[in-house]
Figure (cartoon, rainbow, N blue to C red):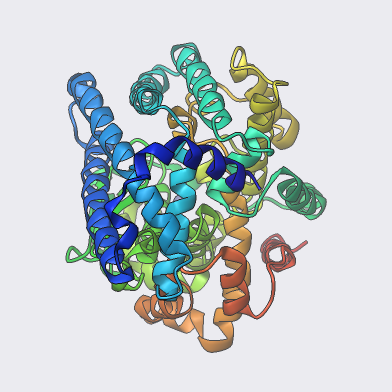
Length: 523
Ligand code: ZN
């Protein structure tokens, strides 16, 4: 509904601009040509901004931040003007219902039109100021995290939330602001659906976690010895080769918070983070990020430079990365291949540890502080904590003041742990620094999507054999054929049905996790 309202407001304001448009008498072909030219220009700006952002998060010297931030905010403003150009909005409006436009272009045009209406209502100077604020807020987050001091980040977080509330209010939607944010990351999702999803998770996970806590504990102490980073990097070379993540289309760097970004299907950048006292962190984060990279790499190249060249939603993207990380990277079959190699790199640390012990250790379930390093069983609770805080921040029941204390209290309540400092507490994730509220729940949703995809994949492939025998590419080819290639052509719910033959059902994830941990802990 709210699009219709917004459309009315926007278009009535533009009447005088478009009344003497020359495009009125253009043919569909001419209009499409104009649309393609516009797409090319937009993609050039997107590419530049992506590369600047990747640079900022990886290698750019911090002292130059304010110079760069001001200029990238300017570029974002130029892109804003381009994407909300009244003539283009009118062109998109014409083309979205034009019967001569093919189905794929029509889908893309409809998505662009919706996007334009969502942003057109925002005054450009406020949009640019927000982009600049996000860059500054990111810099403040980095500093605050390095000093483990939330108070250095709190004023920026407050401003980011206030700005987001204001920017979203321009849409004049009937939905709450947080519901709009949830929908932006996962079209079709809202608080009601997420509440039901998390309730279903809690119902079966909480008792299972309690059983695991009481069971005989598995050894994992050997994973946190000293593992020199230089040696970890040598192991990584072989891992990237196994993942077929090669330099012709992908590149790995290091950053404070691992991420994946891209410009087109043959230019995918991932990062990882090495921890000397944790041998598994960089490995699993690499497998995770490469999962994101494959999604982009495998999208049909004819969608390059257009909105269809992106994954369907954040949840769908996370489903691909979490599938690689957990359903492949944490399996015994995967480690049957890699463990002898890891032992060779670290004979002192792992020489006496058997494959079975290692496999158990990397799957140990234990309440912890860091989401990205959490085991599969407790992971959804980390996400739930963030989801509840975000809901509170946007309905006014939680404030940024003392948010570190709120955070710590939730960790005590849900995971029973005492957070020792802000670095491993509230400052651990990058997301809130750039206003990405509504993103976190997609991590848990994507994880659950992945279980259902694995069920479908197993009907066609002997996954364990392929992992064990170094055929990771065949698994990626299956994902390409069934999921990746379509990009944003379909909605997540449509794609789920196409791939698995049924609607999303959280039961697949809960069955998987129950079976895995019952076996692992002999419950
Ligand atoms: Zn991810």
